[in-house]
Image 1: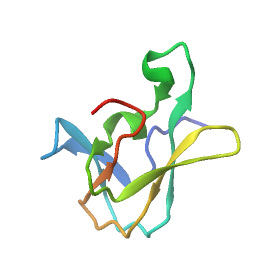
Image 2: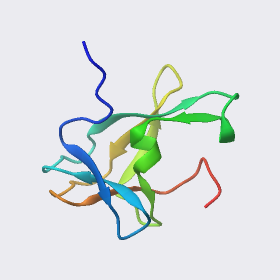
Image 3: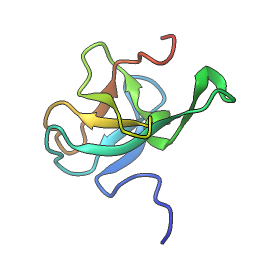
Image 4: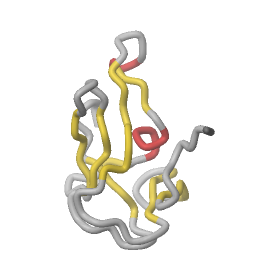
Length: 98
């Protein structure tokens, strides 16, 4: 089994928000769990290890995704609304200073 930093329905490309962003390569249903974005770890800046999901999702005051904590304490990126092909996924940052 090999590690895949992003699922097949996501890619990283230039963002109109800031730098690079996380984008849908195909339609994604609302309430889809996209995977782990942050792993709590006090040895890292801000107390989290960011995966590519957490590292490339940009902030928006009106996001289309949110973080949900799983039973292991990992933060998962979950869509709040349907995401269209080529739409940027966004998150309202709560773990960091914006």
